[in-house]
Image 1 (tube, one colour):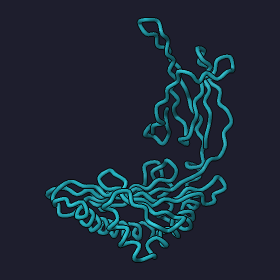
Image 2 (cartoon, rainbow, N blue to C red):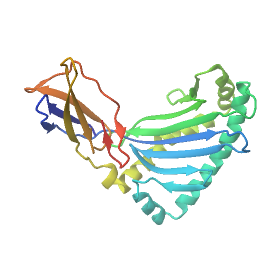
Image 3 (cartoon, rainbow, N blue to C red):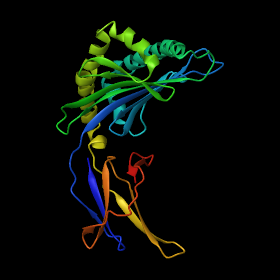
Image 4 (cartoon, rainbow, N blue to C red):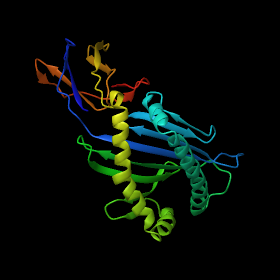
Length: 268
């Protein structure tokens, strides 16, 4: 969903323009972190549908949990008792896979054992307003830098650093690795995203209009700055425009990034 918020310059009058459906997405973020003094890395997973956290997993707790604003996920578990157990087993397997990958990759970088290193994976899909597949993604980062990613069009692995050539060589030796992930992000991910959107439609398909406040700040030398704070809106996409007598005033305008408010809404 995307909306436009218009505040009349100086007067601070609010007008909400047209709303319309936007794309939807499902994304998984996996992170493994080595810790001096611990035998096993810590492994964490967070799953999102659009901008809403639906689940999280942490090997320190060995527990898969629903997101705080995704109470409807509990209904998923009630209707499919096997679901949580199956997902937990998959994530435990991922934790083991990441442990081995961290060891291998740190070796590619000729790093000594005992340091703090991170391996991250992000994968998922995005669908159109009609819920048809638009794009997918499957990529890794090591110690905060892009490492390797899958080109879904060519089914080839794109390396971002020289050390990733070792991983590329291993994965390209078995084409099933790329084919499996292409099938998941283009088919499986889309099917699950549609299911989540249906089950959580009261939350995920809602549109909460923004509220706004405009304040005026005068500098010692007389220059005036107006600030507009939009909040309580969902989903995340929003455009802000200053108007004066109905005319846009784009000059000398600065924006901060859209931020989560912590209660399932956003502010900007």
